[in-house]
Amino acid sequence: MVNGLPIMTADALSLNYFMIGVAAILITGFIGRALAKRTGITHILWLMVLGIIIIPVFGLFSRGTFLALMPDVASVVITIVLFNFGLGLNAHKLIKQISVSSLLLSANFIASVLLVFIVTHFIGYNYLDSALIGFAVGGTSAVILPFGSISRLVDEKTNILLNLEAMITEPLSVIFVLILIVVAALNTTNMELILTTIVGQFSTAIVLGALFGFAWVPLMAFMQHHKYEYSYVSSLAVVFILYIVTQDIGGSGPMAALIFGLLIANGEGLYHLLKYKHNKYFTLNRESRYFNDLISFITTSAFFVYFGGLVIPQDIYSLVVGVAIGLTIIIARQIGTWTSLARSSTPKVDKFFLSSMMTRGTGAAVSAALLVAYNVFNPSLITVFFSIILVTVFINGVMFARFNAIYKRLKQQEPPSGSQAQ
Image (cartoon, one colour):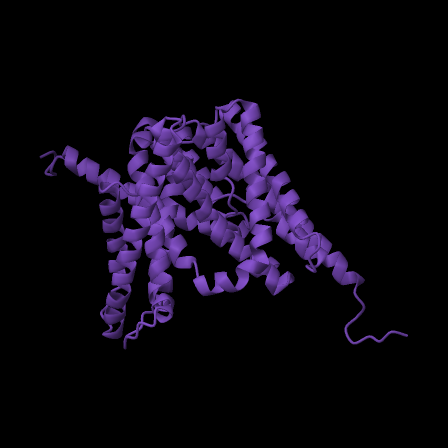
């Protein structure tokens, strides 16, 4: 006792640090979203900047400690992110629209991967490392989608194209990175062993994810029908259990999480196709979507602050490499969009709009974390990917401003509403 007060023990100090950390995550998450709303710059960039301020600049936490925790952090984040990716994939909508957008999706994804591969290999990375970086940044990020009133200036089909592209290519990037991580971990040129391992891990994940999903949808329907409070929380518990089980038997936990989310979102449709009749149907209602959004908010806020904390601002070489890759992505976007839509009836202003959407975000950051967590890359890669996100976000903002100017000029050239040709 000191002055009548109990002495604070080491355990109490640890608890205080933990509570301060939780408070910091929630506050920075809120601040990041608020700044995004005020400035139009995506929240993930603000969160990473806040992470840089908290850790490398002020040195409030040890970078070495953060790096040691990277495998665990990456596992939790990738599970939730891929689960939410799966929940966001509406199979009926994809099948209906994919034929229209498949050329654009393929052209942009392939152009990004190939050009980044060429540039990174030219810089000095080997073939496997170049492929890993190319796929990690190949997908357009969904974080660019809430761009306010701008989306209302273009055709509805254009918005659908952009939504589908982000919905498909971002998880696709992470999946390819997971495949290449297996190749890197095996460290062999034996193609039979590589293919056997990849097929084994991913088939195990797909089967387990599907089985868990098919079994869980009727149970969720039962709980939803009987109005059990907070029944949707249990889905998050199940996806973590699924991840652990899949990893323990040699499968890919992240892939299982993706398939599980996909089954929950589309389970009733699949039951209908299989002509399985039951009385209680499950739907992702507003309450369950809100909960998933809340969990995603907390998780991504923590992750991007954490990710920013691992950036080394003094590492000029990594920053320059990131800028080079970011500029390559921008060029690839122009090539992919204008080539794939050359013979399309899409208005020119809409084509310019689509060519402006090149921001990298969650998929790229999570992929970078996975590469570092699995010891595929040097931790300086975090700085490279931060630079890529920074460049693509900045250029995206410039292109938005340019798009607005073009749109206003075209509107001024239109004849007044109701006027008649003389």
